[in-house]
Amino acid sequence: MTYATSSGIREAHVVVPRRTDLDTARLSFDNGLEGLHLAGGDELDGILEGEFAAPLPVVWASEHNVHVEYPLGARLLRRPRANTVRLARDLTWSIDVHGGGAQLTADLADLRLQSLSFHSGLAHAHLKLGPTPCVVRLGSVKDLRIERPSGVPVRLRLAKGATKITLDDNHLGAIGNGLDPGTDGGYEVLISGGADTITITEGAS
Image (cartoon, rainbow, N blue to C red; front, side, top):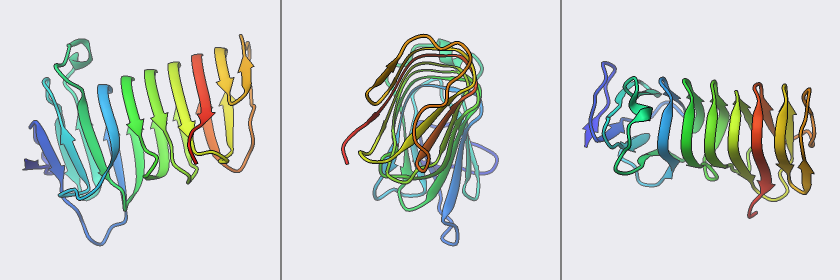
């Protein structure tokens, strides 16, 4: 186990230390991600613990601002196992992914999210969200499933064309010029690029 610093480290097991006077944190993947399991964690040694397989990313942190940067081309290489990042449940998190993502499983049901943003493409991902709504921003999307607790409203905003969209009991085919279905007052899912095979549904309460 190695503690992250502001200058960055490249290790298989990384911990980001805690500042006791801060109750918010931000996690940024600066060069995309692939093959990652992201979840809340109990009894962590800091605010974040990461277990990474080769090729290892550089992890650096300034207070509660955490950056994970994989090497260029790392997403093209096969990893022996998925990477795992666990986040402290007692903080409010903002999560940003730059550079595209794939094969992501994010169990965020017991985390407080201020925002969740994928600034480029996202493919083959499963997001499980908690009872406190936030805005989820995405670029282009393929094969995405989003689960939220039963009874929490959601509004889906599509800026461009989309195919195979399922919003609870509504099954939509091809959409040419954007769509704005759902209910205000809960999660807001904004997709600025094209979308193919999106399912947004209720999970357990």
